[in-house]
Image (tube, rainbow, N blue to C red; front, side):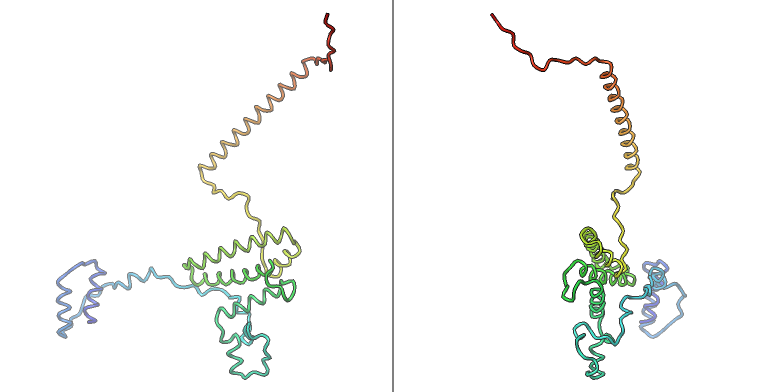
Length: 247
């Protein structure tokens, strides 16, 4: 069976579609008679250059969390009274990615929240989106072809931009505090989103030229009207004409 498979792969790599030598090689392999085959490139060797290696990725934001920290659901428990085995089960040492992300979100929320009961203000929502965006970025470094998570990351970035814009307009001090604590660099959006193609550049240059000519013509007409008013004498008409008596 191995000899038959090697012969088929060798023939496919050499571009042979059908040959009687394959049948004879298969029969010889079935009868237990093996003969040396010509060394040829295998199909696996041809496909190998097209494979890509996964990147190792950079440092993760979850690496900063100590493994001895308890999960978000068990933060109020006294760790000294728990058995070592139970403590390890409740800590981040054996936690999943989602549990670690919850703890990271809680840490970022604690930095920007207004009071201990704050859960739905703009600052809290920005902190939650920041942790999720960073998690999406780290995931896409390892899996760059994951289109679904890339779309979710872009949607989260747009949502955070709107929240930052609203916070900057209403509470500028809170906006500066959030950007400092969460290490966010706010950039203003461009005024115009048009793609600069050759046709658009030529059309814009033509429109500017037409605008300059029209402005020049308006200035000339205005100058002519001013000169006409200077040379024509002003005739003062009576304000009121009394009616003449009729016989």
